[in-house]
Amino acid sequence: MADESSTKFYLDKQNAKWKGVCAGIADYTGIDPLWVRLGTAAMIVIAQQWWIIIAYLVIAWVTPNKPIGLYHQSADEEKFWQGVRANPKRSTAEVRSKFRELDRRLADIELHYTSRNTQLADEIERLR
Image (cartoon, rainbow, N blue to C red; front, side):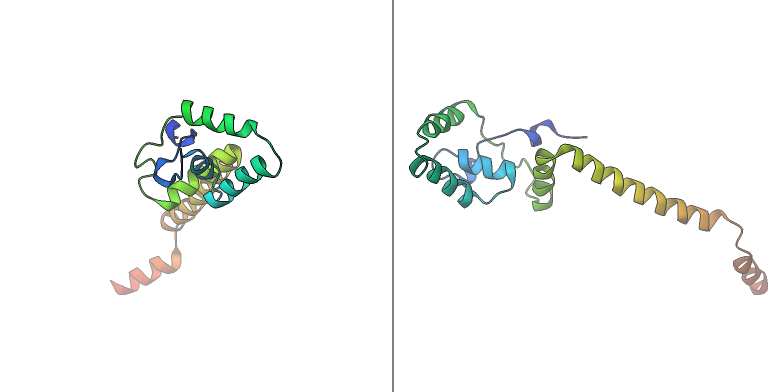
């Protein structure tokens, strides 16, 4: 079952430089925090988008902190949830595909063990 808290945006105080907004964006998208910080600084200084400072402060004020142990310290789990946030339909399709493959393999195993294998039966008879 999908954990609703794993798909929300949080401030990442563990990796924060100032308020944790850029680290939160990086955690949410899977982009390296350095690139998010550089992009934000470039937008403010080079592109002169001064409204970003106000948006940054509002986001820092209204967004909750990321719960400690959200991903249970597993890098695979963190990458999985980043993929879910980025494209939920693709993630669901991947999970369905994996389950279909597992189901097919189990059906093959079941068929092998439940079908009449005459060669195996002959070998068992010879051993008796």
